[in-house]
Length: 332
Ligand code: GDP
Image 1 (tube, rainbow, N blue to C red):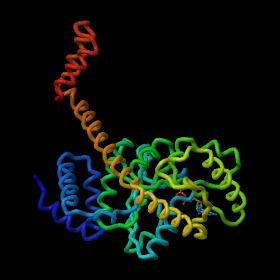
Image 2: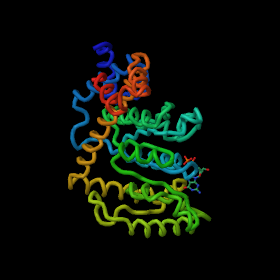
Image 3: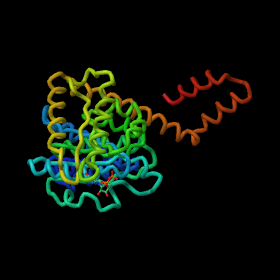
């Protein structure tokens, strides 16, 4: 395969935990060029063949969602620094559907997480600026795999809460954390039920200073709402749960981490962790096939089959169903 030697070097660099190699690897998997795609697949295969990471040593993938301003970057910085101080290696990635619209990125242009980014045990990757959420997420999944191969203990996957992106991130992570700001009671409506159902932990941020009473109220409201949800098979008693934290003062972060670890330990013991990862792998396989077929269709105008069958349908020579079936046959 073309570029295999170079990929082996890159794979070795990533497996050795070299952050520059990791950054180059992620750039490769994010590239839209066909030749880069071939290299990216070879790289992923090489890392897989190297057998990393060993079972039980996988990174913990934490999805983190919240609307702009709730304090995601402040939280990631404080939380990330706490984990780094405990000797862990922490990677931060982003899935950002809005970057396509703004042309910017949630992690890219702001000088965020400055202290965390200076830590040798941390790796922060700006979000890719590709057009389509599905595409971004597929490549983010590969970026997660590279971080895992590079030996990171925790991979934080950040997304702005816009509904669809949570669904995608929940297919990428082991546990899903929803960050909220203190609010009046009626704002409970603002969080869609589906997102609540996805969350393992709801953290009400900014529980400090004058905002603390409101944060505690909001936390109690969500704790009540979570109690009304049907218990999921993949949860021990008491989960999903709501807690209050302050990303600014660091209050509650250690407890939140304990809650996450307890949940992970329970899921590992019960096989839910492995089951979830297996289900996700299957999901992404099917998504790759779907996207691959769409790509074939996108090239179809050059082959002219779509236009030819379309004309036949328009002229009443074929029914739409038969024409579609014949058309799909030509793709095989
Ligand atoms: P993001 O858009 O979700 O990444 O939010 P940021 O981390 O940029 O934070 C938005 C604003 O909220 C900033 O002005 C932060 O200083 C502030 N903020 C974040 N976390 C806290 C917190 O725990 N307490 C308080 N009082 N303010 C916070």
